[in-house]
Image (cartoon, rainbow, N blue to C red; front, side, top):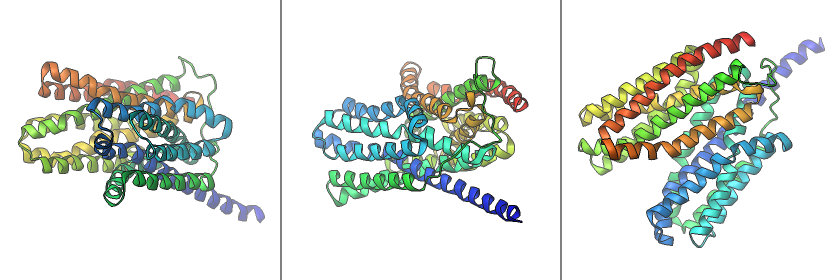
Length: 401
């Protein structure tokens, strides 16, 4: 009789822990992604305050993104020593302290050091929070990872708007300190409420993953798809304002048009995470990438009004792939190490996001914006053979488990 009573109790506790993992990691994702995009709202303020040129402003942004990308693997190693919860909480606190230090900076050097600290702290979030969600939900993690991914977009919308509003009500330094307090509160919440997340017993750890392991090879294909997907997204966003300007869009309407893309992207991340669980990884990736290519060409060729109508759909297809890819990382993690797999995956995709606009920009200078935009559509199509190759690897992995 006690056993019969204890089983529902344990199941209820496990369900409660999974819910706490999801919502605490969503809060972390919203904060850290918001911290990253908050820089865009601060750049004009810093330009006026410190008399910075455009190259210096690019350096400021690059320092944060670069340190966040570089230290993700180190964050996974630190988590293996002191635990994911402690590492994620300390990283969040460091990200907040970096912004507090930015409020004390008196020039470009101090600003870069402060943002390097904040970016280093933010490097803990993607691999560790994603790993926590994947362990908590096991083979059912694809949908929750879609919600987690969607939370980052909410932070990207909310925190830049919040810092812009605060900067009109108080000195920008005080506004940064206020936002750093928010980060400190989130860090405390993670330390207190993020449950430990032991590996789901349904997922086998595969030790000694090597070149012949279908999981390891599949992960490389998944990473390549992620890199190309990020390149398509960032390359198109580089050209999209100029394409719309060429169609006669006004400057105020341009901001609205870009917002339509981002809103569609947030919705796409939310929907495609669940869609991938029902429709399958490969089917969803093929649909979103081919749809992205068609939408890119349609937006490029259509007059302004039809192009604007297509923008939310373009954003949904262009961003939706990422939720499906992130949800597949735990299934293909070499050696069953989710944190390291997520760290590698995010390092590759963030690196691609940083490099691809430069590559496409150079191409645009040589062949023109129309052909360079076509190149982004062709990059999306290049995902198709990789996805078909990945289908075979996913089948092998399923057979192995």
